[in-house]
Image (tube, rainbow, N blue to C red):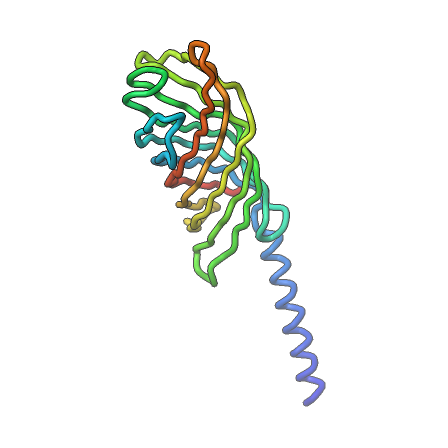
Length: 197
């Protein structure tokens, strides 16, 4: 009887360990994300009050251990101003590259996971007039991004994401011989989709 219990225990342990390995190997390591949403400035831009705007991102994910991965991509965000140092009816657009690390962890056995991101930006700020002409471009420089949210697994390697992100980019610009420091900071509420492969 004791021998049968030992055999069943060993077989059971092997099956549990093997199923965990198989499940882990079947998880997808890559993902493609598109997200977008509304943005609100967290401070004035060189004494200019910015109105609510919006933006979007395209990201490629790579998970190198079970809950930790890297991401990189491209993003765009626009915050308009009725009156500014650069004139009336002006838009300030941040565009460029995003890169960083993401921690994602499942919430129990549910289809939900939470995530946190810490990343860098290599972006520039374009100032556009009412006609859509670029009147100033700061050139690219480094900034940072923080984000967190939830991920919901829809099935067939599709996920729905929702979260909040904070971007910060500080660049210098010359407007008619006057140097301005553009400290572009905003919070954005984002909704997106991720396809794993």
